[in-house]
Length: 97
Image 1 (cartoon, rainbow, N blue to C red):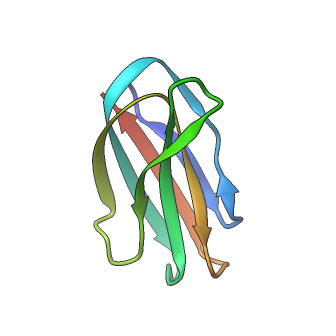
Image 2: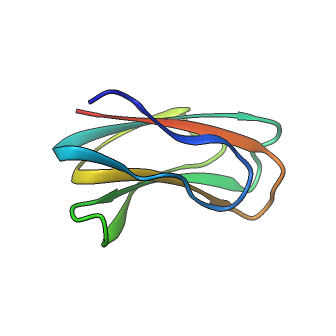
């Protein structure tokens, strides 16, 4: 599956767009990059089998590698921005195989 831009210079807390992978995939990679100080922020990789019921697959936090790979079955994926402070712009790509 081609990579999907899940967050695009996001500064507001909450989820980005959802991607229907049009099939169930078992390996998902999240790549995060940011401008500014990421202290207190987190990017969560979310998955769903039906597009309604969501589960967390991985969470990126400052100090982690900017690339996280997990193995979970999911048909839908998204990334959400969370944490305790604002102002920093985050982008993230999700690739599934």
